[in-house]
Image (cartoon, rainbow, N blue to C red; front, top):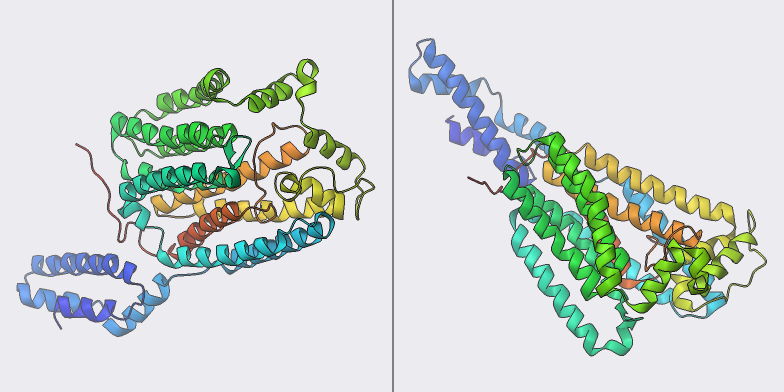
Length: 440
């Protein structure tokens, strides 16, 4: 049996198409090395190849074993946790709707079912397409954001709240996995590659702060992108001085947000946004600007019980805040402090699992995408919990699985689909089926 026939027979036993190319290439290298060794011992070239192929073993048995090793996998534990949180989120919205009559339960069910379907589609699709078509997907998504924003202006009476398009906030976080792909494509680019990555990250930040506009979304993206760049530099992706570059980037964590904040206060922020920021930074001087929902949330938390409904009425502010931004407060007021803690523990387990899958991933693209997805969940959970407890700035945030919001739910499920896809292909040889941009 010749080399080509042997390799073709072996890889035909493998069901994962993405792994076949890498395995075939590896087998070919092994056969070539073995044949060269036999030739060095005096065998003719044809006989050397025959012996090299023969020592590789039966191609069918070896192919079946390779199929077992490199088959796609599903993280059942994480999937079970996702389903549990999805069901709990639906139940919470159902019980709150009995109080508010907000008619969101049915919409939440539709969003969850649709989100789960999209999550499974992303899981099957394979995340490596972001590494292949990075720029096409990135600029296509930028164009989509502009198109949706224009549609939002046309339908302004339906989609604008306080001069802000709420439905666009969470979709902006899909730039995080796209930015991970940008970082991956610029590996080895040196300082110029690093600067290109920073420019690719600056655009979504500016879009979030000016186009949506959402101060918190823009700052969140800036922090997430900064952490991802820092990880890439420390990992040696850009062939620059790690310590010096990391120190500069760490300093930028303070300088850039401060600069964005200053520019925003002067030119970009709406009047109500400035008032909220001043009330948060200087509560004694600007305490009158503190919003009613934030004050009411504090009172509800004071009267909450360890288990069961507290004494404060649930109908304190509008339904949008009740079912979305202040959902954590409502959960504690309705079901007790213990229920809120249990929800946070489940979310913490999910976030830890996302980071655990990501950092153990050998594929560099998968690792960076997973870390970015984990950071999105982390900043959303921390932000909304701090805001509900009265120690964070007011913003439009979403508690994954629990807050009502169609676009938010779909974005969360897309990010989880990417993480599941990363785990699915964790045993596939790194770099299989992906291209990398090179720099001179």
